[in-house]
Length: 399
Image (cartoon, rainbow, N blue to C red; front, side, top):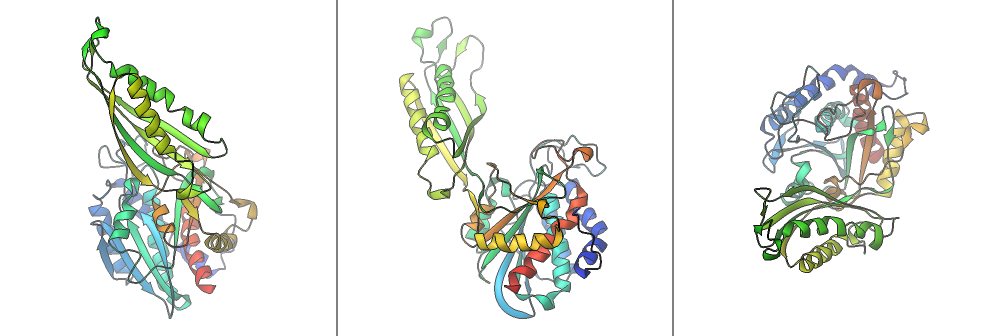
């Protein structure tokens, strides 16, 4: 919870009145998580709430939900976005509202994001007279695998045309009671790769008669690391990680193929137009190493996310809004991460700002990394997230 206690403020007072409802929403979403583009129950819950506060909803991208609030006076269109999908993780927490769906868990905070935006929508509907423009509430499916692009292709930034966008992510690396609103590139780009190395199988007792894809795979894993240590300046963050190695059937058999999968993440000041080209370098080295080992390779690259870059004017607006909540300015911090987020697709097309709401509290066990089976959030900070949305709206339209 923020350090501000000025409960005389009607906005803050109203949000605090809705805290029990806010937490109940978050826990309901957490208990019934659904994977990307499978958020059917979740979408129904979101639709029901929005209709209950007087908004008309529409579906996009199958399970995405959009609602529009027209203010008292005409003006620009501001989009507020929350993500909906969970992860294929078996939850290991002991909370009473832990996942009821085996092997699926809200381990990234999307349950909190939806709850905060829904309650913010209720407060904004109640203050429609203060809004000089239009708000588009967007609940997006499949953030973990670039669902934003599907919504963009279906026209989420059009009709009415969006002029700016705001997003908030609860963030365990940031201390509870803090919020990060940062200029420039704040999250990394992400490319996901799959490699099949083709050799010639044989007997481990006669390796000279085979073409060993295992040793070629070992060479690929080792040699590609020179990209981040020898080819790209250490002032530009690059991480190449192998998350999966698969091949072979028995200890004394040299397999025909080895499959490798992993990610390339990058956080460059130049954003998508950077000259570092880590993925092109990666392909060159993989092909070269395989040739040295007399193997061939097939490389599949999925460009999942581009770097997320905050717009300077939207950062100014968000910082002004945060200043009304976090009156101790030391609580408004900077945060950059090489993790990726498909909010970047929205902010690459219209001016946007993405904030990190701190939820890290060791005493509550909410400082565990995202995507961990023991992940949880500090629910005491959720009202601040609601207020961040609401204050950002008022600040945006006031300018």
